[in-house]
Image (cartoon, rainbow, N blue to C red):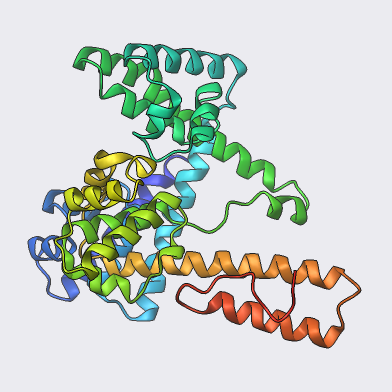
Length: 358
């Protein structure tokens, strides 16, 4: 089964290379348009490294493929991702209680080595809530936030100490988190549809959100293009919504927009610490190669996820009303239509208001 991974990856890489060459675009020129490093693009096209969802979106945006070829590439990408997941399922063991305990102890040791910062201080340094940080410290395998936390704490260490904690904590944490996701997905297939759906994570693409914000902080021309596609409430991460609002405010006032001016605006509003501080703003500007070229595509992805979340919210509200016998059928249908229409509408309009009260 593991042999399927390089074969599926090579098939996708070969097709992308073929499509680029058919359009007469040299490798270096294509890399420049996508804001990729040429060597990275070369590794993509030779199948030496996997292509992430966000990187593929940027590549497709630059290639501007017709629907049939785009669908073909997406299917090859899906097959490569499926092969990779199947290989992980076949080789990964469930996370043991002992492993959780060891990772928790190592994270506690790392926190002490980094000066033993309080949860409040940590919340100002990473884009996580204090509750999420507390949960990560108690069970590092519970969420990807523990990896962010460990990586941030490791910055305070000497190179030797950092390498040690990378080996005993950060790498095992990444592996454990992946194993946990695979286990949850396998368990979901045995649950009733209603139980599985109630535990699903709302549609989101945090990487696309970060890429959009990074592009806006790096190139002011991107702000105008993105502003026509996104409302602040389209962002799933609250900190990203706050940063987006501050960027738009600076741009509307005719001021320069970059991580420094954005941090000053957020500080003026008393919101800088809540979004992760100026470090997080600078981190956004280097979050993904090709963020500038793919800003519009990433903005569309963020908006699409937001519309899906609103439709889910609207559907839940409609179901709640439908179960109540006090609502006449005609009124219910009209309200359902209004809620779904509102969910699909762009702009700041949010699900929740309708002709009927709650």
